Amino acid sequence: MKIDQFNFAGKKAIVRVDFNVPLDENGNVTDDTRIRGALPTLKKILADGGSVIMMSHMGKPKGKVNPKLSLSQIVKNVSEHLGVDVKFAPDCANADNEASALKPGEALLLENLRFYPEEEGKPVGIDKADPAYDEAKKEMKTRQQEFAKKLASYADCYVMDAFGTAHRKHASTAVIDEYFDKDHKMLGYLMEKEVKAVDNVLSNIKRPFTAIMGGSKVSTKIGIIENLLGKVDNLILCGGMTYTFAKAQGGKIGKSICEDDKLDVALDVIKKAKENGVNLVLGSDCIAADDFSNDANTQVCPANDIPDGWEGLDAGPETRKAFAEAIKNAKTILWNGPAGVFEFDNFIGGSKAIADAIAEATANGAFSLIGGGDSVACINKFGMADKVSYISTGGGALLEAIEGKTLPGVAAIEA
Image (cartoon, rainbow, N blue to C red; front, side, top):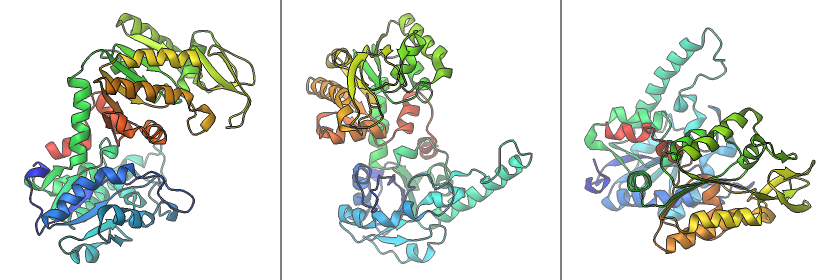
């Protein structure tokens, strides 16, 4: 069922949203991108004359109640955005009364789903090597099914609108759907947009296609890097993984971050890029610091010749030029992961150079997709969200979709 074709009048809709938003020490939302992303779906339900039950996770409480990760902290923010006083259910496994009391046009937010181990469906407090693990896993799957059934009982229909968790086979993303027929489960507007954006990048590639992969570890990105090598014209690898590549090629990297067990993987990526005719752009110079802090002493040096006691924290001036060159003429652009420690204002230059080049290319007709928490935070920090084609709310989900994997949260609705 398409959300546009469904009339929510008189219906209760349970919506899986992604309200895993960053909070400051006082529990205030510091970036409401994900809340704003869910609004079209939520407002459509309310405007039709339906009532909405929102469910989400926040952080990684690992099946235990953690007041610092309570969704009660965001009720005020969600209410302001939605334009209705959002009610709150402090126990999402026992919210029958709150759900049944909902009237058309009203909204309810359930407590953090991950306060319950059943949401993720993983046995808690038992090691995989333990002989009893398989039995515990089986028992947890049964409990997960019951938890999903309980959530489903609150509503007449189910809307999946949390792209950020679409790659997880959790109770609220890929089990709850079993309790609704195909005419009463659907993707929300945000999910539809996300799926279309990924399709735009992978099935409707306009060339040249430039992908920018940043972040600290090669290991977390290797699957997507290998998949992209068969699709892109230019592949920029930046951020902390720069130094794994530099060391793999015999460089000196001081005390820069490095995955010593991935040096062979780095060399293999370089080899595959050549074989596929991909222009692989790696950092040639960097901004090195004598301490991991915003106020550290800095110097520009070759990325493969960093003095002892110093570490690379951002892309250098020559590297920034090379990045911009590979981006500016592109017609399809994917960016996931910053070029440096952008949280420190003195080390945002590399990421800003990437953002500027993407904005220029987009203005010239390129389709640009930004995904992953850090890249989105970068774009927002630079005030450039309106200068790119699409900002994805999903990190891992976006990467897995681009890797060509089936997302359980999408497959569940389409089944």
